[in-house]
Length: 324
Ligand SMILES: Nc1ncnc2c1ncn2[C@@H]1O[C@H](COP(=O)(O)OP(=O)(O)OP(=O)(O)O)[C@@H](O)[C@H]1O
Image (cartoon, rainbow, N blue to C red):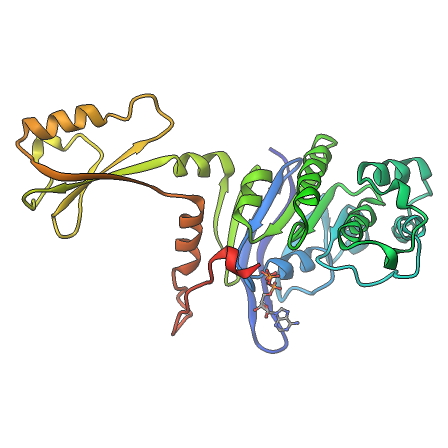
């Protein structure tokens, strides 16, 4: 796989002294959809803003499609389209003029046919002459995307693309993102919705308090999630897992009162029938059985709750849904 963005040792300390990024190393591959998942304040926007040259890094380097974002800023920026969280300007402009102007900013020759395609793909064509201030919130979002695509970027950043949008637009957004990937565009999106990362991404990075705590293929992550646990409450506590059961994926709980068996939901054989038979053979009696499943959400919450070394009084991170 070919990298398109290489981030090395990136840190950011704001003028206030707050350290928003604490040494990020990350490679984004050409043509992938990468989701950066993290709670509010984790540093997602800071990271994207540095790559786009809106915020200066304190240290470290970023190379975007072969161009160093500091030394070779214009070339790097020309490869990137940014869909920010909010629309800040252009209220009195028409959709068409705004998009045309955005393209011009990057020194690209006019290409009405390309811009028409972008607007049509985003269901904005019939609004091309409307003033932006007259559009609904969802339509304004679409304009932001059209602007970001106006100069045919190779890399598209979507900062919280579906925060506060309705189901229809969210669905369109997902489709659009997959369509862009088909066209060879690399997509990096930030989100604090696990569902969004699950739906859209090829790979998922979890960022918390300025640190990347996990980067994983979504499929691998989902396989890990496909694990279930069977908890066997014992009649009599045990001190160790009996030697006759040592070949099984069994763990004894801290108090010795239960055995925990981990199995793969996706495999055809869970092995539970065999396990129960072997428990009988070993004379291990149990009084109750129950299964539980780990979810992406649980993994995420446990990752972002783990106190980092710098915290003296860690506060639990909010549940992702609650932070919308
Ligand atoms: N200009 C600034 N000066 C000082 N601190 C800042 C500045 N901008 C951001 N921060 C702080 O840096 C941290 C990271 O902010 P950032 O916007 O990157 O987070 P985020 O992960 O994008 O969060 P959200 O999901 O809320 O957008 C936050 O604690 C924020 O308060």
